[in-house]
Length: 102
Image (cartoon, rainbow, N blue to C red; front, side, top):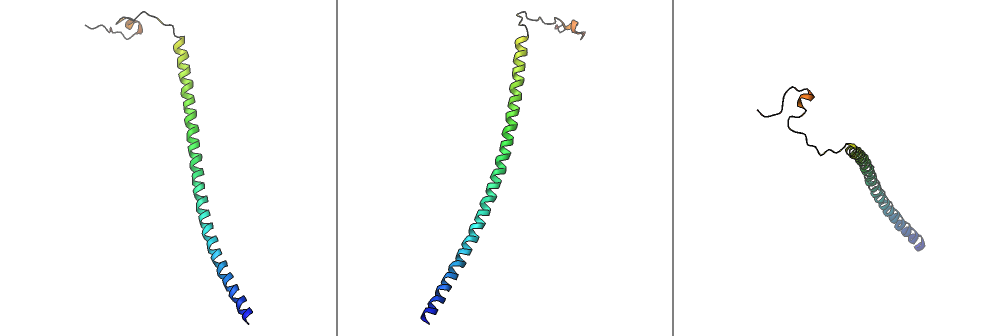
């Protein structure tokens, strides 16, 4: 009988341990789900930031291209040291008035 009660006692101890392990595994699964949720949110944020960075990179490339075109256009314009006098060319432009102060 002593052996039987020792076996029953051991089974009760194992059952208690299994229940404790089951609870611990449940807690770990909940924590894992929370971690996965956080990682998912981080991944989404990373994707959004990546899209914003790509958008800004394209915008910067467009600005660089426009600045390059502007620089080439400025370089192509002949430089003249002759300054335009006040009122010169107003009548030629067709506005019909002189810019000279009366």
